[in-house]
Each structure stands twice: as C-alpha cells, then as structure tokens.
Amino acid sequence: MSGNGAMKQEFFQIDENTRKKVIRQDRNDIEPGACFLNIPGRNLEVLNISAFGCAVLVPGAEYADLKAWWDKNPHFEADVIYKNIQTQNVSLRWARSENHSKSVTGEMIVGFEVLGEPLKVDRIKALEVSSEVISAQTEYAMHLAQLPAEFKTFVYEMKDWLEKLKSRIDKLEQESPVDSWKEAQDYRMTIADSVSDYLGQVIPMKYADVPKLVKNFTPEQMKWATDFAREQVGHLVYGAPFANRAYFKPRGYAGDYEMMNHLYRDELVGKTLFDQCMHKYFIDEPAGAAVKNRGQYLFEKITQLFERTPPTTPVKVLSVASGPAMEQQIFLQNAAPFYGRPAEFTCLDQDEESLKHAQRQLHSVERFVKSGFKFKFNNMAIRNVIAAGCPESDYDLIYSAGLFDYFTEPVAQMAAQKMLASVKPGGHVVIGNFSKDNPCVPFMELVLDWHLIYRSEEDLLRIFKGMGSKIWVEKEPLGVNLFVVIQK
Image (cartoon, rainbow, N blue to C red):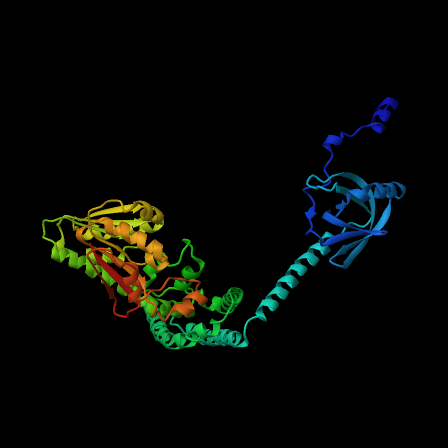
C-alpha cells in the first residue's frame, strides 16, 4: 500500500448524523426507578442496557460537573444496582450524550461503553422477572388477607371436593370399553347422566351459602373474592364446553347461540369424562332446563298464533335477538297442518355469525319439510332497534327470549314500546326474563362471570304497566324463566 493510501486510512472521518442514538433499539428498556449506575458520589438512573453499553439519565444541573469529571476520568468503574441489589462492577467510559426529548427540566441522556467484562443483561432480566413475581405474590397475599376466613374455607373445600370427584371419574375413564365405540359412548353417557344428577343435588346446596358469605363485601373485596374463586375452581369447571363459553365469551357475551345449541342438543361433549359430566350438569341444571323450556314455550306461542289465524290470512313473526331460533326450528318440524299458508318469519340479531347459523338451520329444515313459509334474516344492532324500531310494523307476534335479562328498566321500557309499535292491533309482544327465583345465580356470577338482571312477576308488570290493551305474566314449568305478554 502506498504512503498516500495509508494516510487516507488513518485520517478517515465519521459522519455524526449516521451514528446510533443513545437510546437504541438493540438495547433493553429498564423499568423506571429500578436500575441505577453507582459512580463515585452519585446514583444515575439507567434507561436501557445491552451487553456492551448503557444509557443513563443525568439531571441538567449536574451534567456540566459530571462531564468535567468524565473528561478527567475517561475510564472509571461503577456498580450496577437493580432494586438495591448489586449485580456487578463494570469498567466504563463516556461515549456520547444528547438532550432528553421529553424532559422539561433539561435532563440529559448519557451513553457509556463497557470496557472488559460485558454487562450482565441476563442477570438484570432475571431480577426483573423475579421482582414482578414477588410483587404479584405480595399483592395477592395482601388482598387475600382481606377476605374472611369463612369465604376462603368455602372456596378451598369446593376445590377439594371437585378435585376428589375428578380423580375418581378419571379412574372410571381409564376403564372405558375400547373395542366398541357404541359401548364406550353408552358407558360414558351412563356415567355422565348419573354424575350430573349427583352434581345437581350437591352443588346448589354448596353455593347456596355464597350470598350470605359475600353479603357485606366491599366492591374491592368482591372483586378479589371472584378472582380467588375462579383461580381455585375455574380449571375444574371451564373444561365443560358450556361453562367455557359462558366464562370466556368468544362472541363477546354469555348466552350466545352456540351455548343455546349446547342446551338443546344435549350431547356428550368435553375432552375428558369429568368435563363431560360437568357439561351435562350445566345443561341440566334449572337455568339450563328453563332455557330449553323457553324454546318449547315460544313454539307453543307460534302454534297458537297459527291456530287462531284464518288459513288465508298472512302471518308475520319477528324474533328480536333470535340466537339459533330453535323455537322456529321446532315449529317448522311440527307444523304440517299449517304448511302452505302465507307466513313470514324474521330473525333479527346483531351477531352476524349467530344469524347465519339460524339461517343455515332453518333452510336445512325447510329443504325437507317444504312448508312454503318465508324466512328473513336481519343483521341489525339492538341499539338501533331501541332507537328506530323494528324493520317493519305489521307483525302478528314479536318476541325476545333472553335480551331483556341485560336491560335496565328504562332501556327495557323503550325497547318494549318499539316492539309494541310494530305489531298489528290485537297482536302480541312476548318478553322473556329470568326470575329472581333462579337458584343458579350464585354460581353463575361467582364462577362463570355471567350476570343477568333478574325480575319478579311484580317487577315485570310494574315496568311495562300501561303498555298495550292487556298485559299478563306467564312462566315455563320450572318458574325460572318468566314471560310478560303484552297485547296491543
């Protein structure tokens, strides 16, 4: 290499605009106030760190003195402190600095390079995650201490009882027939039926004490009580597909169309035999049975409408928040005397997936029965129904099975008025609402996070008083689901 070439190599220049900033993407950000660099006489907060350097925060008033010290001490040693724990002693040198872009007091960001042993980033990360665990555990213990011993004992005993039951059913599952699928299914279904009946006798007695245990809880205590209960017993409950959908709400709300299908199908579902037993219990308990009865009740209402309507007179029915429209499926399968009559059924739901499911099911039935009825499906937000009314205004029957369980009184009144305005004179509006006598409330709320607004017959008559020409309340056989009927 020539002399001139060597000189060019020695006197190269670096464009300062191309240098990496002190805050770099290849570094790990540190929790504010957690990590410090201890240099003689001062603790400087570490903002980010990598194996080969770190950035610290320097108060504006101290920067000039520190910069003068660093100029005199280009290489120095410092302790790295993470939450009062010394992680290592390192050798550093000043690299560069810049103004903190968000500071209002002139703070500076100073970058240091490591000389010798790299910074032990993994150790700091380990301390960071350990600190998070300790903090979470401390908070958990603090809040758990706020809960009365009686409540904690109740939850622990419920967990122990379910775990013992699960271990016994797991052993039964191991003995399931393996040579015949039918025999295996019969075996599992027999056990599920038997165990679900047993659960139906025992669990309600156990959680009947919940209202008394939580009666005087503050809102904060109630939050921690529900978190604690779900943490302890949730893994034993959420394996049941029905309970899983209720708690995790994949459609954004409990009581979606697939949960209703679980109730009506009455199938053996769940990954394990224990999960299948729990699922069978949930769909057979009073609240689940009441929903199945609700489908039968609405089927009978539709049938009665057809029976009192002359054969040549058109019939129009609207279901608001229709879900799987099981009552219409039942009617379609049992309405042979009415086939060929001019009839129109409309399903309205804001959940498009639910609406498409209802459409597939009804069209599938219609393909075989060929009733000649017309089916319409309206994807419409419920708030728009409340604000603007139903799609048309000449229905003979409008009903809503489970929507009003979530409505406050003012909203319920507005929705009912819009529905009543859309039926013909003499037509009926039927509104379902779970009764205050629902025995499943404590478990639904505490473990499944399923909250409804429960009402009595007197509540319903009071809320809808003065609407229509006549109003009365009916109920399904268990009395868990009430129906207010308003005649226009």
